[in-house]
Length: 133
Image (tube, rainbow, N blue to C red; front, side):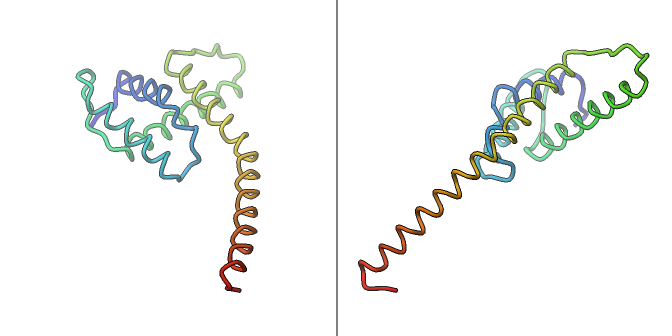
């Protein structure tokens, strides 16, 4: 499939709507969100899509990389006026959502660790009740 600006916009809109970054990278939940994004895009009449979740993730990585490279180049050549289009605006919003999810991830990790410790203590207490060591 050839990606056009209309395809990119549809992908980014679907990503914004689906809140793909609310789940940690590599989790089954995040994979399910990417699956639903691919299914929703494939169901569209215009622009016509034929994608898998992998191609959606790869396209997002490419768009994000191109945007970041563009911004780096424009910062180096500060005399150039920055041309911002709709796609760039959506990419900035998605990067912000991703960064926000990553920054709150540390708190979630502490909570998960505490829950693991509590579950381990309960298991230890439970083994004693059943005569196991």
